[in-house]
Structure formats: C-alpha cells, structure tokens
Length: 471
Image 1 (cartoon, helix red, strand yellow):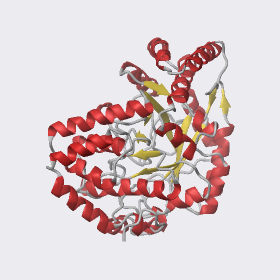
Image 2: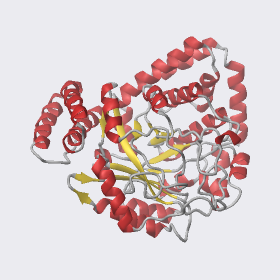
Image 3: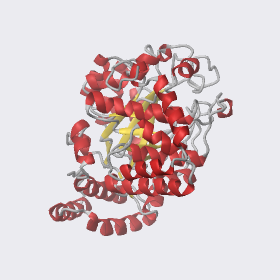
C-alpha cells in the first residue's frame, strides 16, 4: 500500500502506485486542458506530484514541451540564477564485493586494475585538484568492508580537509559511498561532510535484484532506505539519483519523485541534489546490453521536468555527458557540473586515466579552465562556493532560504568571490579577462545594496591577496 510517510521502501516506493501512475499518464497524455492546468500549477513554483509529473512526461505535444522547457529555464533562474557550481569526483578505491552487472567494479571483473589510494596518494590527488582550482569534491569508493571500511573513508576525509597547498583548499567534501548504518552516518556527519549522495540505480525492485545479484547491495530495502538512516544519523543534506538506461525511464522518473516526496513527508526536507547519470561504456560493460537507453531528447525532457517538479533541488550532471548534451541541459535546470573529471583511482596526480581502471568512460574531456571559460562565454557564473555548508545553512535552513528565493543574497556574492579567487590563482589570461568582465556586470544583479557594497569591498581584498570570504 502506497504511503509516502512510511519508512518501508516498498511502501514509499510502491510498485502498484507507479503502475497506476503510468496508466493514468497514458490515459491523459493528450488531455491538453489537464496538461495546461498542470503547467499553470508548476508556474507557482511549488512543484508537482509524481503523478502530475508523469502526465507531462508522457505528453508529446510540441507546443506544451516547449512550454515545459521555457518554464524549467525560468524556475532555474528564479531559484539558482545563472550560477553553476563546480566540483570534481575523487575515486579513493575500486575494490568492491558487489556483483552489479552494469559497473566494472563488480567482484567477478578480473580485467580491471584494482587500486586503493594511500593517504599520501590522496594528498597528491588533492594537490593536483587544488592546482586546477577545485574547492569541492565528491569522494567515491566501491563497497568492500575489508579494503574500504568506514575508518578508511573517515581518515581520507580528514586528510583531504587538512591539505593547504599554495592558495588551494578543499572546502567541502561530499560523499558517495554504499548504504551503511546510522552509526556510520553519524561518523560521516562528525567528519564534516557536505552532502551524502547515493544513487538508487533503479527503483524497480525486481530489476534491482537482478542487476545486483550478489553482495550487500542486493538488499533493495536496505539500499532504498539509506537516506532515512542518513538523516537519522544527523546528515542534513542528501542527494538522490537513478542510472537512466537500466529500467524504463518513465518508471524511474516516477520512483525518483516519490522518493523526493517521501523525504519531504518524513523529514520536512527533500533531496539537496538530484543527479541524472546515464549508463555509459566502461571496461567490461557494454551499455547496449541494457535495452532501456534514452535519447538525448528524452534526457533533456527528464532534466526539465525534474527542475519543474522539484524546483528547490540542486541538479547535477557529470562528464558522462558530452559537451553538446551538457550545453543543452544546463539551461533546463542543471545547477552543478563536474569539470576535468577522472574516474580512475589516482587519475589526477598521474595526469591521465590508468588503463582499465575507470568506472565509466568520460565524454567531456575539457580542462577545468576550458569548462570555466565556456560557462562564462555562455552567460553563466562558474561558482566554487561552499559557504552554505560552512555557515550552517544546510537541511531545512537551506531549503527555507531556497524556497523563499532569498538565497540569491548569499549565493550571488559568494559565487563572484570564489570566481575571483579562481581567476587570480588558476585561470588562463583569456578566462581571466572574460571573468573579470562578468564579475563587473553581475555585481548589478545582487539584489541587496548593502550586500553588493560589501561584495565589492571583499573583491578588492581578494585582489590584494586575501582569500576565503563568504556571506
């Protein structure tokens, strides 16, 4: 029985409710009067339910789809402005005991080069990332209680935060590791993590169990209920995501929104972020084996509808996607992107991908400076800000600011301050020239006059060699 307030996975992600939702969507996909009313409702910036959203996803009317895209673009501007937060993944270890059939880390893969970073190797990786200009990392590791115990993850986080190289510093560490216990989530919280991220992969239980035939990840309920344990452990911000291409995308979309509704209903705080990865080629993984792949057009529509239906969430797109696809979906709601990513263990300090060690093939191979330059030329502000986390604006406090759209008074100046740091410390001459022009123009978009004046003062102090100011 469907119950968004339940703590049981099969009740807040109810299979029959999704089937009923998809049936309702099929029955109403040409009901233009209903679709127009849903878009009118979405314009109120309060989001839509999974059932309402599924009707829009099923709709094939070109005029209404254009309206969806325009609305997604406007909602992104209303909540997040033209800021794009930059981050990089850091792979600590690819040892894994699971049998996930879509991931090259799976236990039976004897081709992949297994590696686990020592603390000194982590230090070299972090310095390489700092030398690019990164301030925010998402650490990744396979599930292996012997090689990757929680103590190793905690020690690695401590190492990352401790490294101060030239003007570089990692100011926020997000964590993407396997579902774990409330006690371990408490330890992660105490270690000062930002967002805890865990991809569901698929919400279809039967498919989930087939795709995860062996290992602890086989337990659908334990995995799906991880966010509730994380929040019980004191973690304020959690990030959802499915791996599009494993199961029918309409099923996954409904399940993803139901999970967001569940977090709101139980904890009063929805997902801080939603990621939208698509399955990609990797060492012994052929994505064509999974017959649920989605086109770039469907992918763009999914991104737009997530923004419309969960307007407050941060949306993340990785270098799995090409430069062309990233350009298309950024305007439809994406607010965070990775840059210059390496998906192998030790890929940054080594200067390249180690053969057969990546989790997936990267499609966007540009340097961080090239990505920053592209964003600036495209009308966006690349932001390296981590201020909300460090100022205690997390969980319900962040959501209150975001939903009221007061976050601009913090995020706009913080984005400009961190961009200024990047331009002085790391940017090429061309990027610096464009960036300085953008900062000058964007100061006018800070709504509060006193905040604007203070931001100008701090920009001057950064020019003089000071660092790490925040609102």
